[in-house]
Image 1 (cartoon, rainbow, N blue to C red):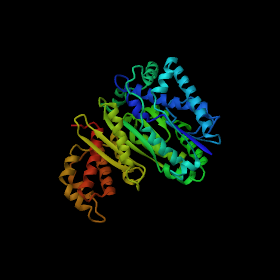
Image 2 (image 1 turned 90 degrees about the horizontal axis):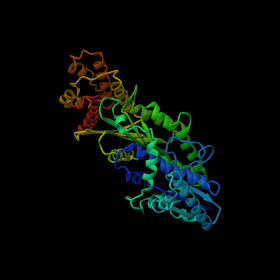
Image 3 (image 1 turned 120 degrees about the vertical axis):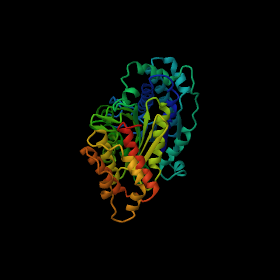
Image 4 (image 1 turned 30 degrees about the vertical axis):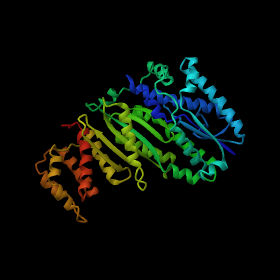
Length: 446
């Protein structure tokens, strides 16, 4: 058995080269969709020639029209054909695909430019050759593709840039939300850049597909269904949460969201995706998230890169998966960040507090941060005791609180402290940062 794998990425780096000028969200989404359309077109051309393992190409996957960039930047397939046959077929099918994409751009003369100014790499190898790299053939192919993706072999400033040409055509009829539209829901100029990536996917591939690479088809189908089954991810993002889905493919997501939309927040969005992923893909896997709350005039490329860095931070602990890293960088340059485990009881309480504040079901007294700083040492000392609680201390500190909403908010903060049980300065700093995020989001930004 021989294997063929192909990549046209890295997607983000390539699209970023086109983000100068206006209509940035439209250009970003159009660029992302272009890659997905290219891969879909290529898969249509090769599916009868090779047995495609990744991504899922069954049922209606290649027929149905999707409103999102659904196909990843690579495919992996197997075939009993010889290497030379596979190489010739792939070459011919790629040429057909480039010509088809030139038709989409409505400029057939651009087909040659597409072939010469678009990163694309392939690998054709036998099972035995790949097992010299890794006993898991899927891992071996991905390692080679990852290495090849670093070899970006085109100039980013092509006069008649192929992706810019496609974007210009798409932007004319696009209804993509602008950053300004996404950032005005709370009455201030910030919005959420959300990235997501699967946890333990590699372990699942190792367990299920080391002996038989064909078994990865099942995972490919589940990932496809995660994005498309029932109410699809595009509908959830764009309509249920008022955001803009930029990319959804493999186990990756990039979306822009208002911090609050109607009675829902960006944390509710994360909870919906997290639950859906486990229900469809499996309880042995999960998602981790990077959330950058960005100022609307902050460079879009930097905002996305920051979210990707936060995603890396959420995934850096090999022993704790399913985490979220949140960061707010204020227009002044001051910033707050925190990382929480989604399945931890502490996160559930923090989510309850954030949602309560943003939906104005509860409030917090303006003196909260000052008071907590003032009683920091007493709070830390209290939690040195196994059953220590700040309930009595809160009653004393905030004895002049009259508003029921303030009282309810303070009770949530107190319950959160009792769950966290900070005992050292770093613990307190983490809590203070988390509460500062809430304070900022509610609009108290002085």
